[in-house]
Length: 459
Image 1 (cartoon, one colour):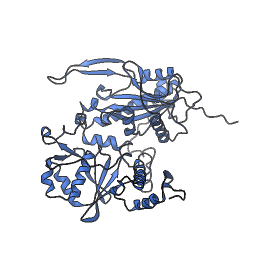
Image 2 (image 1 turned 135 degrees about the horizontal axis):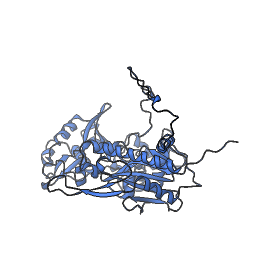
Image 3 (image 1 turned 90 degrees about the vertical axis):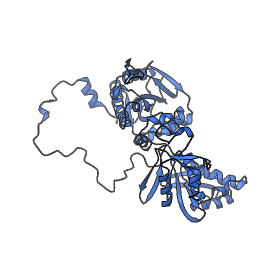
Image 4 (image 1 turned 30 degrees about the vertical axis):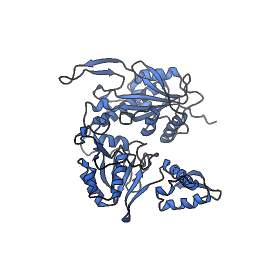
């Protein structure tokens, strides 16, 4: 609380200014440490509107959690932890005739000394403080009519079920939905997702979770780092150095492989040109040929295939390239999709704020002095792979990403350009920019491309 009425939040080395408020609002805000009932600022008074604005600003920064208490017991029996910045607790109305079932993506697990209920589809996770709730959730593994459940549970538990329904942890079934099995998740595209694949996708990226991501050195104080080179096995050895003499002439491929490196500092006074970008994409990602196969089973459809310069599991070629262009000679700033079939860039409408957020996140992830000239987001059309493969679909996609990134590195090295693979991306931000559902087509990798800055010569 600042003397001039400003309220700021400090978290480690970071601070967020939340704006200026009246003395009454600042006094009420002090209760946020122990909790403010949502109903207490739901009115239209000036004070209520101030507190509502403050709380929503905190929520957008992911700095709130929500407590659900029973009227008969002061103990919190559920605490809601938002996983996305725009989460706000909302109850989806349930009636006695409604039938609900747990989503097949929902799971209850131990975290430290707590039990948490979560789902890769949900905007929040739920810390369970009452063992009786776990029993109720277990019963919901099969469809249950609210009217029958209502006889056994408190009103606060019904409120919880309504919150879980809003988060898609619970599903409401219609008569045609049967027993709420695999196909009944409210979205036909989810039929193609295995449980572990969707969890891995959302928990190994940013945007749909609140856990630390990247180089957090979580276990640095617990175990020492592994050696850079594995200690050799004991046993007889065959020395290969006599068979690969450095005196032999180097091939171009060997030269490219040895010279390949990550570039994080780009020369913005001499950016990559549109011609160079066209050559880079032609070399690495353009469709070379297309064909169709016979149906895999009787009554099925023909399956279309394409060939491209990098290998792909099952010739699926599910990867799509989206270019965030910040500095390219001959090409306007903006977001573009690379049409690999016709070798063309198609502009996509995205706000300047979204483009900036994507570029700044990439700069941070690379620990770079500036933003990339061109940021290539590698997205996957997930169903293209999971239509054929079970259990290994997502792992195959990531293997394909590795093949494509190495191809990017070699092409950039050959052209005298700089590139850098980026370990994570914000799948929720990408979904908002493209208006694509994250489980239909979403980011699985990023690559920064540009002209590397030459090191300054010291005199």
